[in-house]
Image (tube, rainbow over all chains, first blue to last red; front, side):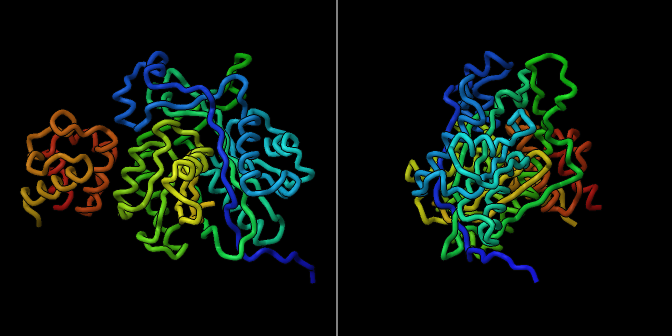
Length: 328
Length: 81
């Protein structure tokens, strides 16, 4: 009979930290790059401005900045981090993983470190993995980071998507808990829909310095998000044993305010539920959008530590993942 | 079997819920895009809500033909028949 590790009974989010690309690109500036208008962009998406990384801001630098905040806010030091999970689609190197580079930069001695590719659902995938790692006893403190520099993957000839994307990083520390702080993860994929959102193949590129672009069938994503994903969101709430009126905060992936509006109609959440609208000043930062939205609500005082929040991510794959968490 | 007016009235409620247009303005001769300010994303939601409400399927290739409220009501009537 093999021996196994004793795990921790429960896990929780201990902290959140974010970093936003420092360049503010408003719709007026965006419309110097694409044929569109401020009114059209606001009406279709809610976006007023987005944040882009400067040349000095990289997936590594933004991850490390977000992670340092999260580790400090958790009352920990980098030595105590036993695992690092980074969700990204914009680390342009297949190995070493960005997680290993983050470990080196933070000075973590020898954490388990790996990247995951789950696009806009990646942060919630990471939280689900971290929860399992803590409960199984394979880790004590897991750093989960979602980071993207989508501005470098944006097709400025595609006026239906170019104004959406942004750059930033969000990090949480997940640690052991005496009470449940992370509800069951509802996750999955739609293998029939692999072509709905894609980033092109690097091998097809011909010019040095070129990057592949994000291509998206927005209408199909909208339909999927407002029907199937809205149902999955209900499922995550029900599996956590919460009625809609027991929920305090809803933080959907910030893909489009219109998707959020439609989900809210579908979910019939009470008016009292605080809803993240971080997209207005951030745009769509994929894996970073949920932790950035969480940090913004906590910093503004719209949400407070200890409240229950439903998070859900959905995107290229297609993949989705959501769970109820207690806010750090 | 619901009458044309009953279907129009239900569609009007759906349009009201999704884009906020007063139900009495949602008449058969009104164009979704030109008269009721329904854009393509709202149209997706209206179609999904109609499918749920009336138990019909409106294929994507058919959706482009639904220019007016009357087009949608007629499609639902045929699909229910």
